[in-house]
Length: 106
Image 1 (cartoon, rainbow, N blue to C red):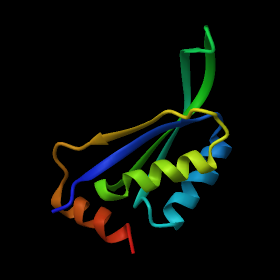
Image 2: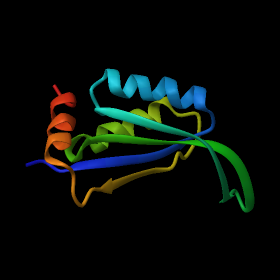
Image 3: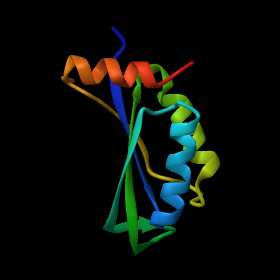
């Protein structure tokens, strides 16, 4: 059985996140995209500490599609270096896992 994963990324606005999330789901790269607005980030960038208000995006997908999800995020993103991480899932309800697999890919 193929593993399910979450692809974690952040976006500079809810508007940009929603537009990208819709495209990711339309392309069947993710069964679902969760967007969590209102995150505040403090981070190093170009030699100084920056602060930004961002939206978190979690893409529910198959492990075999994670690379394509990451490529789509890079293509759609306005950041030069977007945060992109694939998080393996330890345990997923079998019915929910079947739904993720059914709704992704061709």
